Length: 458
Picture 1 (cartoon, rainbow, N blue to C red):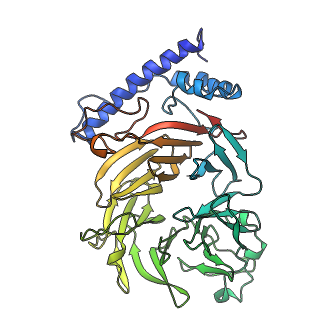
Picture 2 (cartoon, helix red, strand yellow):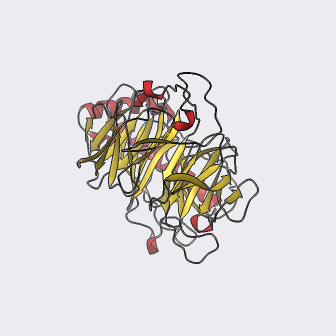
Picture 3 (cartoon, rainbow, N blue to C red):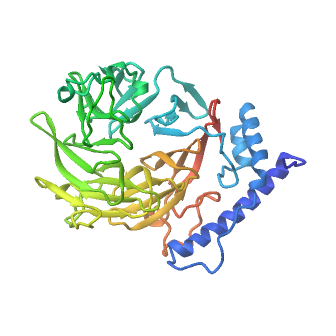
């Protein structure tokens, strides 16, 4: 390990070389994304990777001493030089509450999961709750326990519903003694929990099925043609996903071998009203975006994002809700003009809504800001697969596979309230010396989750 005479000596190298590298890299990327040219020089390289073990020791030591602000001053957060392999615990969920507290879930759906409430530099590990869901407006939250799901009004408010896990796949499979009744909720492999806007029921996408759950029990939402063949049987789904429209009219569902399926509740039955063939191989994510306004354009207005994956051939479509007519069918593969084509390359793991489109959190460690028409607005490098993110007013909260929750702030914006750098504002000072981005977002606080340890603050 490198040795320095003083922490200040190490800090000076970290800051000096870090600023120089990021300036060169951001300027190099500006040539590509703003000037629309090819750089004449090779991509700049990080020079501080040999400092990673030393800086990791400082992160631990300064946290033990309660000197997190001094740590950030001496060693501004930066993922590029660090190696988190074997250290980091994946953070799968993060959301921000109105009082700026964070709710965080550590662990993926197939791992042991645990949760924290974080308030500034303080945190509390929660008992028994292993993951959460929320309504689109965060008026209601769902808290998953091994034996039940509670719906609360706000995070700290009263419990308004207590729902039991699904016990069977329903009448269609009544002759089969399925294995759901033997499972704890922790065994379902829950990928997503979504609370309906009314707070009266939840949507749940799991490895053993996709369900709508309310006081009367559970309803299986089938995305693929599967057959139950034996006692103790449970279905197996890859990439199960679901979302609920803000007006509670629709749900969007899918799984690895399905189409993108838009369902409407008609006479008490969830009925497919639109089928969209994916642009790429495997549907893996969907999200309603009702922030997009209908200004009379061909494909504008409220949307639903439809993501499918196959490595570098992944893709994201956006279906305008106003285009949905009885029996609607479309194909992203065939480039039907009833769809918007947001992206045709990135493997998307999470998304956040904006009035003009989406922030796409991808497996390359970037957030890509794309218009519904595919326009490339900007990028922000996070440094790990973006598992979850949320845009709340001017804050962007990001959870990553590399064991981090990062809070970004875009206040102030660039002139004329612009969030992205462009030819017109290219001369403006960058808001963050250590981020790889052409946006107004700056890193204001970072939480690190190492395996077997409580969060560290950077």
